Image (cartoon, rainbow over all chains, first blue to last red; front, side, top):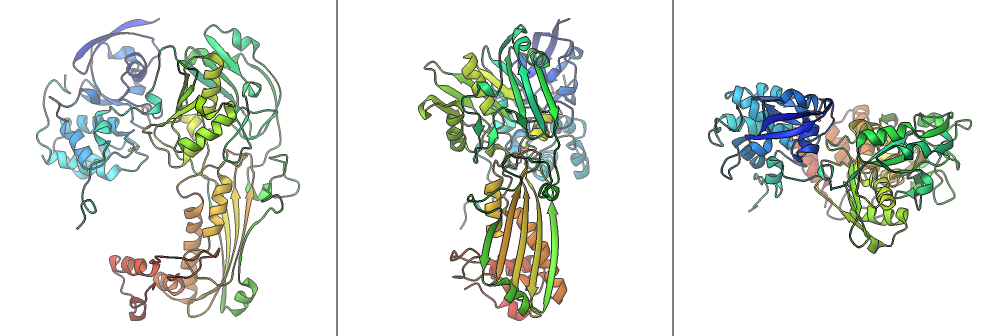
Length: 166
Length: 429
Ligand code: FES
Ligand code: FES
């Protein structure tokens, strides 16, 4: 039985009809036409669909849409303020981490949620945090280096508040 | 002196990537768009006796169910021996047989479950060496070995006299090297969106790497003049050679022509991994003659490429392979025999180097073996045999701007290896 689902998407309340078997990824991509979360596998293996759900990075292909009722979902579209990139986005760009870029939105979300929880990580902790995100172009090291640079403050302070941890 | 070398230069399209605004073919959709799903061969080799799509067509929400009979010209790819939809025999597991366009995925899958199809599993062969045997199951009606230029099953390169070279050698060193199949595994799975524009032109948004290859190939499949077909390329989520072959554009296009509606065909991860083209598997047998002073006097290479069930880009890969497998070595006596064998596997596509660097894996390991045999370093064996400016390569082309020796000297330096004086003084000039 389809149901009306209400949740907060990138700070804005949304209302959408969802089927019980539909995933959050399907609802975002197919019903809300938000294609920044990618569908690399639909099996929880690649991380390209990563979004932030109530402050935690999750694989949206593994989340039944109806379970996000009343919760906050942030995609890469919700990052950055006043036309300025979020430090993680800026760092990925300047470090040249994305090649084809298909894994990038998921990487940004995984890294952002991680830095909110652990602002002063070790190199190995960053590697561990991104271990669920596959990059076939092979830009892993640049992604990890960029996250370390953000943690060291090279790209300015990480904005707190409405963006991510609703 | 350099503006960019050694500096961090952000990508021109990087902002789109980090903001999630880059649009990939798999992100596209259109109002009224239909979804395509296909019925695939369940066996490595399948005889198809008959197909009845009547019940499938009756499923509400189904717009079209097609078989090979609906494809204007059913052959495609660089060597056009691959079927858009299988005819009487499907030659590899996962080959497309029937395609459906329906309002959504579940309707398309339901329609496929209603297709009546009578099939029979035929004997098959997977191992390339087995496939060369006389009594092996026939992968292709014309035989399991490709016939080059209509005369010969061996692609030969000949230079000097290898027997004479082996006789002059102090040692004979042999090696056998195998490489497995490999899937490109892009993070974005293949997707196409096909539709007819207001003037009846077929437009296909494609994940192809070779827009104009695909354009020519598909105008033939659809039997459309080039001004009635428009291919639209895009930023794509990885290809690695895999998108030089067509996986979805052809079927999406036929369905768009049939239905007059936009049709999207987007592969699942399983389809991408299991049923698209792959890097072919290879076997190399190398026999070298070498002098005590480290000079290669003769080299013979027996190359075997496992091409899968259709030629696709396998022929191109073999042609390039036999041209380069001798390595960057000046060898006066050289013989290369290349064979391309068909097996009941996914067809061979291109992947990172078109058969060249896969051969270099074997050639480089063999060259190290030569160095060990006569007790010199891996640098010395390569420097001893390196091409110089003006030499001819193995197929007779003059070499210009040769810098193999200088490159090796630099590598040695970077690796902290002190080369003997005479090697430091060598030059490609
Ligand atoms: S699409 Fe969700 S993990 Fe791959
Ligand atoms: S940049 Fe291509 S998959 Fe990561």
